[in-house]
Each structure stands twice: as structure tokens, then as C-alpha cells.
Length: 471
Image (tube, rainbow, N blue to C red; front, side, top):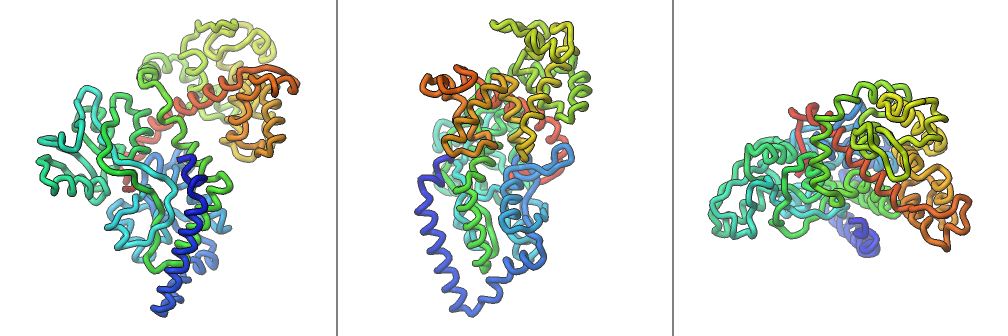
């Protein structure tokens, strides 16, 4: 996905121009220009962009009282691009296209795949992600090894999805199997049912499957059942101007790195983890974290940090083991050095409360050094990298980033230049010298994975009655 827009930019631009020409020509012939230009004009006149979507962990949900989700973040960028406010219209999956047709929203962003059936009811933008439908099963259940191996198995999917459509076609080909349709049950809820062994099989897009494997470490991602498909946004069929505006935005978001940053935020490293290490983490947040949760929450609140992020840092540092000791002689839950312990005012690094207090205080010190970074998420990534490798090395990497013309306020720039600190042609010219610059990248990415899991455990309870991943 990271290379998708880069490799296909010219092709997509030509496609955009062709679509614009064809759509406008059709509308002129139909003398329907007034309707075509209505949506974008109304958005600019009212200052409101109305997003139609469904509730799910990665599409649109609330965490700590704030909206979040891949589709929401991308739609917010679209609203900024148009210089308007974003209104979110949440409806059940089965009602999204009806709401669009009735003018209750301006576009749908809900993880929609472009299908032949949907093209009859809506216009679609250029794609922003490619995915593939995969079978989901428990690790104690043997999954089909081929489409022909579907015989006598039962699959559970949501009604009206592309999964539903695909299973219909497979069954029509003569393969004898069963599928049970569920109304408005999120894909991730069906995956949770597989994890609990309440059902044997479901289907999910590859991005959803990989994301949920973090949360449900007993599930396995099986064979693909469809060729690769594209995700896109949908607008009303006669809204040529709206599709053109969406396409312009998606090309802009690709060119400026906005799309990549959002994709990385939600999907980066979904494949780059050890499933058994994740199982260990899930176990230890039940057996070890409760001993330290109260002090983590209290100390995090002092600095307005999310306690789940701090807990993720603690786990990455020590696996919630207060006696942990590294080969460099840092010790305790937060792996505090002698010098940091003195600076942060603690006397016993092995004392869990003191270690947590010192670690969070030091993390806040790093956080304050990056006050010029407006994006809180990016700022925290810089702070975590500094906690791991040291502020001086981060400054050296940022100096290299500036020399290379990279934006020194983005994690992508820091991620690109930190590893260069291990190369003599670079570290000889820096103030703080050699560093194993690849380590803080892995460090931050693991913390984000653990943080994501802890957030999910909070958010899932709030979404049990809501609509899930758009398909």
C-alpha cells in the first residue's frame, strides 16, 4: 500500500481527468449541471461536510471522549482541505446508501470495496487502499486449504457485504457449503466470536484481519477467497463535482504524505510482530499489570498522559517485572539509569512506584522539548524515541532530516534518519556520534502495538451495540 500511489500517481491522475471529462459530458447531455454542482456548492455555503459512516474501532469510534478511526481521520483531512467543518452521520450498515440517496450525507467513508453491484447505486472515488478477503478461523480449527475445501463448512458473515456476495458466487459454482447471515453485526464482533470458538469461520478484509489479530491472538488468517480489491469513498451517482473533489483530495493527500501517515498510524506493523509475544502480553496485562495499574494511572494523570500509553512503555521496558535489569545496568519497571534516578529525585530504582514516577517524569521532560510540534501524536513519538535513545541522538537525526529536505516535525522523517546514525559517513558529522538508530524505531512501534491493544479493550465495550466495519 505504501507504494500504491507513488507507483500509480500518473495513471491515477489520468484516470481522474478522464472520469471528470466523461462525467461532465454526460451531465451536459442530460442537462443536469445544476444537480451535479449542488453538493460541493452546498458544502462551501454551509461550511459543513457530512460524512456517512458506521461505528467500528478503525472506521469511527470514540476513545477518551474524542473521535478516532482511520476513515474519520482521513475525512477530517478532507474537511480541512475544503476549509469546512466535518459532521459525522452514523447509521447502521444497511442504511448507509439510503441515507446517501436521501441527501442525509455527502459521501460514504466506511471501508467500502468497489463492486459491480455497488457501482449501480453510487459513484466511487479512485482507490486509497487495496485489500483481499481472507478466511478467519481459530488456531485450534483447521481452515480450508482451497475454495474447493469449503465443502460442508459453515461461514458467518454480515448480510449485504462483499463477503456475502463472494460466498454467494462460490456456492453458485457448485461447491456445497453453508453460510449464515447476520444483520448489522460488525466484522470485528464476528472475529471475536471466532476467537471464543463460538463460531468456526468468518471472512474479513486483510487490513481488518491483521489489525484484529493484535487483539485476538488465537485467531489465524487463512486463505484468500477473492482477488485483491480496492477501497474507496462513495458519492451519489449524479454528483460528478463531489467525486472530482474527493479525487483531487486523495491525490493531494497522497502527494503530501497525509494518506501515508494515516495508514501508518492505524496499520503499520500489523504484520511485523510475533504472535506468541502478543499472547504473552495479553496474559501479563491480566496477571501483572493490575499490581501497578493504580500508580500508573495516578502518575500519568499528573502529566495528562494516557495511562494506557504509559503502561505500554512499562511493558516494553520490563514486561511489568520490577526486578528487570538490562545489560547496560538500567533497572526496574521503567529501566531508569542512575543518572536519571538522581535527576528525577528518586532513591530506589527497584521500587515500582518510584520507578514509574521517575520514568513518567522523564518522559514528560522529553515531551516538553518538542513543544513546537503541533500534532500531539507525532510529538509523543519523538518523546518516546528520545526516552529510548536519548534526546541528543534525536537532534542529530533531525539535523540530517533537515539536510535531506524532510519535514523535521514528522515521525516518518525521524524514522528515515535515525538508522543513519549507525553509518560512519553520517555519525562522524554529528554532535553525539554513533547510535544504534534502528532500535528506537522498533521500540516505538512495539509500544504503539501494545497501546493499541490496551485502547481496544477500553473501546470494545463501548461499541458492542454499534455498527461495525463498513463492507
